[in-house]
Figure 1: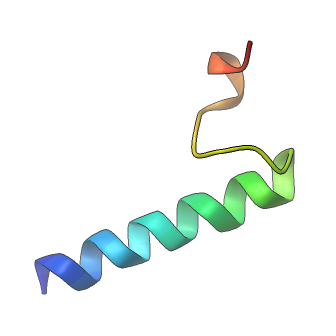
Figure 2: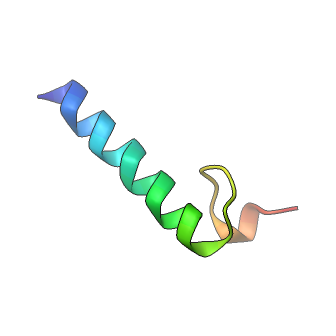
Length: 32
């Protein structure tokens, strides 16, 4: 249960930031 939640969160993070700027899992305001 916990492991699947972590995997889902990680996958969601990858999808979001692949869509935004093809960067690693960081918020846009943390981008240098």
